[in-house]
Length: 174
Image (cartoon, rainbow, N blue to C red):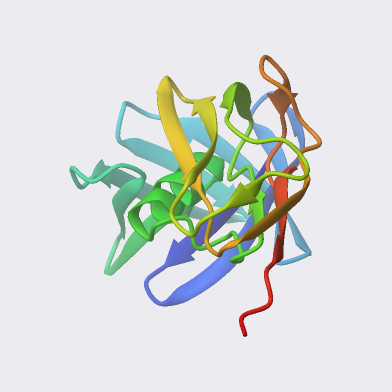
């Protein structure tokens, strides 16, 4: 499993490389660490690394995927940036991972409805496709006026993150 963690103002990519019992090998920005992790209770963990013991308290802040992490005299604000968080951020920003002439899936999902086919003329803001992901349906609209060049998916298809859904060739303006 791979996660991006935003810790205070720093971002780190954390990968779970291997686990045998309490012993975990993790990669943080491609640097390997072997740690012994014991969950003490719902919010506390005991961690051994290189002969040193750390007691960590992880507290939910009330915002999804946001935590306050306390370690003796240090406090860290941690945000987990996973596919779900990227999807939520994308929806709040109005679909910014898509350019004006391409629509891509922000996360794994299922194509519910396709409103266009290759050769169709579309206007900016016109609904092109509906995707169901995480029990939510999202409608994706054209970012530009043009002609649909490609729709490589059909209703009922399962799609992956960043999979191409619709391509529009922009019309020349005179």
